[in-house]
Image (cartoon, rainbow, N blue to C red; front, side, top):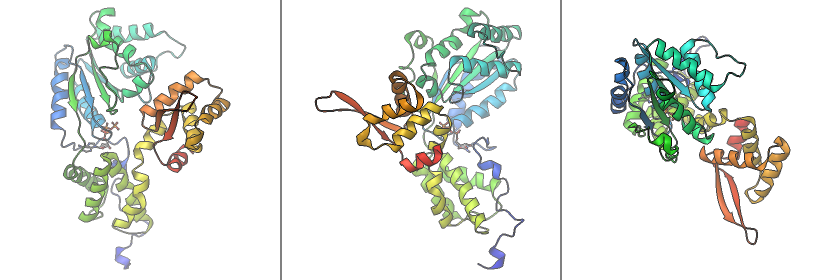
Length: 372
Ligand SMILES: Nc1ncnc2c1ncn2[C@@H]1O[C@H](COP(=O)(O)OP(=O)(O)OP(=O)(O)O)[C@@H](O)[C@H]1O
C-alpha cells in the first residue's frame, strides 16, 4: 500500500463514530411518511387537551418503529399540556415497572423505593396529570415483553381505564411490537379488548434501494469523505436486505470501519465486510441476550451445551444450578421460544407420552460466546 493510502496514527476514518451506536437518533428519517402520518393524526388531539387515539405499531425488527416514536414524541413532548413518555418494556416488563418509569418521567425523581403500592403510585401520577391538566401519551415499546411476562392486560387495563378510577385523566397508548407471531389484540383479556380499538401503523422491511439511501446518509455524517466506495455500500445494503434488519447494516458499517482502521486503510474494502459480517448479523441476538434475567441465561446456556437428544437432562441441570422448579422452567422455555432464541417442539416419545425437544435457533458457539 502506498503511504498516501495509509492512515497515520492521529487520523481516523470516522467523522463521528457515535452515529453508528444503538441509541443514536438520526436527523434525517426518510421512507416512513405514512407511519409518521398515522402517529401524528392519532396524537394530534392531545395538543388540544383531548384524549388521543391509541395506536398499534408493528413490524419486523430494525424497521424504524422506535425511531418513529422518538421523532414524534420529541415534538409532542415540547407542546404545552402534553407529556409523551416512551417505556422500553424489555427493561420495564411489569405493570409496576412501567408505572415507575412514567412516574420518573413526570416527576423527575424516583418513586419512593420503600414498596409504595401500585394504587398509590398510580394515584400520584393521575393527580399530577389532572392538577396540571396534562394529557399523557405512553408508548410501550417492545410491548411483546409484557406479554411474555403475562403483564400486558393488567398494564393496559390500568392505562386505558384510568379515567374510571381517576376522573379527568386523559391517557393515550401506543403499543409497539416486533414479534409478528404474537397477535396483540387476541392476547389481551376481553375487558381490555373492549376498550382498545387502535389505529394501526405497519412498518415493512426496507427494500434494498431504501437501505442504500438510509445508509448513505449515515455514512455521510459518520465517515470522512470517500471512505465507503459505492460497490462496498451496495454489498452492505444487499447483506442488510437479506436479514431485513437495518441495524445489521449500521453495525456492519461501524465494524468494517474499525477493521479498515486496524489495517491503517483510508477506505473500507470488501474484505472488511467479509471479516465482520458474521458478528454484525448477530446484533439482534445480542439485543435479546442483554435483556435476559440470570435464570433465563442459565437455561439458555444449558440448552446450548446439551445435545438435542439429551433434552430430558436439560431440566435436571437447570434445576441443579438454579434451584427453580418445573413451573418456572416451563415459563422460561416459553419465553425463550417466543423470543426466537430456541425452538421448542412437542414430539411423542414411544411409550412415554409427549415431551418437548429444545433446539437452539442459533449456532451454539455464537450464543455461548455472547453469554460469556
Ligand atoms: N428511515 C430511517 N432512516 C434512518 N435511520 C433509520 C431509519 N429506520 C431505522 N433507522 C435506524 O435503524 C436502527 C433500527 O431502527 P429502530 O430501532 O427504530 O427499529 P425498530 O423497528 O424499533 O426495531 P426493534 O423492533 O428491533 O426494536 C436505528 O439505529 C435507527 O436509527
